Amino acid sequence: MQIFNTLTRKKEEFVPLEEGKVKMYVCGPTVYNLIHIGNARPMIVFDTVRRYLEYKGYEVNFVSNFTDVDDKIIKKANEEGVSAEEISERYIEECKKDMEGMNVRPATTHPQATQEIDGMIEMIQSLIDKGFAYPAADGTVYFRVKKFDEYGKLSHKNLDDLQSGFRSLLVSGEEQKEDPLDFVLWKPKKEGEPFWPSPWCDGRPGWHIECSVMSKKYLGEEIDIHAGGEDLIFPHHENEIAQSECCNGRQFARYWMHNAFLNIDNHKMSKSLGNFRTVREISEQYDLQVLRFFMLSAHYRSPLNFSADLMESSKNALERIREAAGKLKDRKEAGQGSLTAEEQQLLQEALAFNAQFEKAMDDDFNTADAVAAVFELVRFANTHLSETSSSEFAGALLEQLLALTDVLGLIALPREEMLDKEIEDLIAERQEARKAKNFARADEIRDLLLAKGIILKDTREGVKWKRA
Ligand code: AMP
Ligand code: ZN
Image (cartoon, rainbow, N blue to C red):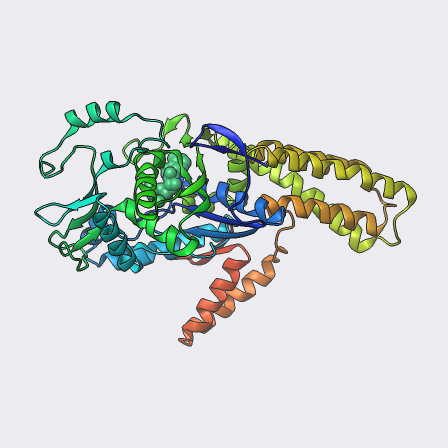
């Protein structure tokens, strides 16, 4: 299996540190708002990488953090007049709902920065002790970039170029740095901000140190794969490498994977352009499986453009897979008998689609080609399934289709649809429960309907519902 490694800018054969096991860390979102569809790209892509590694038989320890202390979180908390913790907890919950909708599996561990402050203080102290960091007069601790000879190896930047860029960018308040390139490990508290005591000052950690510490705690000093969006290569991942390798004295991560960006209608997505879309907004219009299909229809290192047209064609494509799965299931349940000699032969032929799928995925997770292999299987099934097919034949093709779509995290056999009558009866029961102030039951019914993809809306004209 080949993985494109940002560190070497080459596809390399994947060899895990420990046979049969993979230690993988993916930088997660900063939780101050609902996640947007750009954030969804690394979630879907690296969840698929994880699923494929598992399909290949690896045991994957998958760690992905939530950054829950940050300027943006504090700003939002101040705007709403609530604590930073309330904001981060709220959006972690919302993020988890979106992940579930996109069929992104929960990580083995989802550490949160605010729960790991002790480890951060420890690592910063160790960097100071080793001469790689220094506290300034006001208690800010900086990393001494020039002390690390390999700085720039991930982003392929050279120190001289960085230096000239930084000199002109030196901002006031940073005169206390020994060198403009040095970056913050710990910063003093400001009025109204969360803070923790430390040997240098009451304050909070810099962003980069979080990931170095959480990766070490949950995966160890050396890991197999570290991943995130390409905007994180510099400075975030470059700085993580500097911190971890200087502290631990060994290579931090073997393979660095970065997804390209998602644009909207060929523009960068940004709040100021007003083209910002949250995953939640998309979920009001589409099953989030459609979003997942759309993301996987391109290679993760290619820029991807979001548009209404592409979402529509993704919806139709996913529908084709589901129709085929539905037909196979019906035949499996209705048909009888065991494989004929001809069917046996056909199943042998169909194995070629698995090989095609694996070849694509082995080539740096080429999901676009893997999806194409799934469609070939769908076409094959549509061609060869007939009224006389045996139950076993339909069942075997169905199993094959479900195994491949499952690696992509696509649900080919969706939940059984509820009938309108069943929905309306439950809504009536919920109204009764509310009237009787049995809110627990009312909530239970709403959640039950939600799980079946039915969204309720209370309006002046009563309760309205729609399918997600
Ligand atoms: P953030 O919350 O900004 O730290 O981002 C969380 C993750 O989403 C990081 O891996 C980012 O690289 C990634 N990301 C943010 N915006 C986009 C985008 N437009 N396209 C792809 N990935 C993105
Ligand atoms: Zn990170």
